[in-house]
Length: 426
Ligand code: AMP
Ligand code: GLY
Image (cartoon, rainbow, N blue to C red; front, side, top):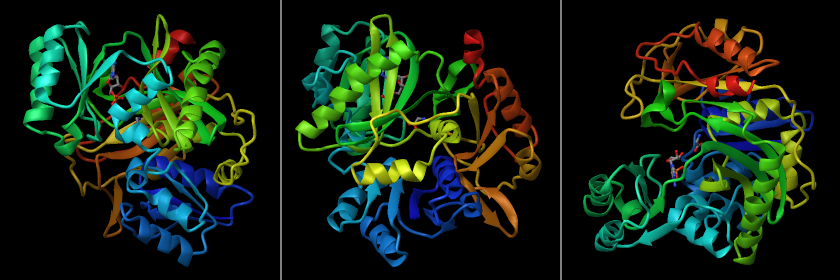
């Protein structure tokens, strides 16, 4: 099978790496890819926001199956274009991608299908939003979310009325997120631990993947600004068999049934962002793609062919059983460029990767890297993900940080506490 992976991050590197080692895969192509992905796949330049260009590449290259990593090409309708042309692809249509691209759609959808989530109100004008805050019905802290995609910056947890009013002003009057802030969701603050749960779905059939936990803040002890994710581990010790049963019965099944009923059957990876509250699991958000850096810890644990699962999803013949996983803890440390998440320092020479890659149990996935005059240099916010595995979380953490210790570039930032939360469980 000839497979095309769309994207250029460490998540796509993990997907391409897994596929490249599989029996039924003859070729892995990746567009646009990056220098790390080039070691396991043939990389082709493309504008991933242009579905027609992607379809032309897939046709020209005789690609038999395409899998889309990031949300952006999905929201541009890449799956719609491939499906119209009868080309197998794994990912949701643009309409189904609204579960991620519109928080207002996702909240209304959950209300219609009784999926547990924070109490909320959708506001379409600053006046409405300010009046809602004045009523104080959600208490404090209160959560203010821009409706549309806002590069991870659209959520404000306001401690008091003044904070809520300023968040509303930023989104709806100053239009800090452009059209994404035309509508906002005001919601109750949920108390609990966060975890993620992943399934691969096709219509109402799905294969459960794994749970994981992300570390969204830039600095140790969950301080500093939100980022795309500074590290992750899998599986999550918080997602016990009992929690998993509830997540499947109360969230995954009603969501897939609801999407199918409403005429937008969901195909692809569904990422359920959970808050594990005293009253049970609640949805914080959906993403319509795999997590990054969660993919970098989950795919290395997968103990069967990803190509077969993806082909089954694309053709509607997924098995009715969970995916097979090795129960070996994996821990991922993201290494970011100086300035991240506000800006990025590109062009800094990266050294030590060869030594880091030789650490037993370590894997290195590239994100923001480029080749420049024979050197590997930084070319993006999150530069690399370093993954460690071991028989315990402690061992996996040690492997990951041993590998990180060999890597150097000017301005590099990484958290030193990734995975610490698992040690209490251990
Ligand atoms: P989101 O972009 O919706 O995932 O929100 C970003 C982060 O804000 C989440 O990962 C949570 O840490 C936090 N968050 C969002 N909604 C809530 C909520 N209702 N209660 C508590 N924290 C929340
Ligand atoms: N790690 C969070 C995300 O992929 O959205």
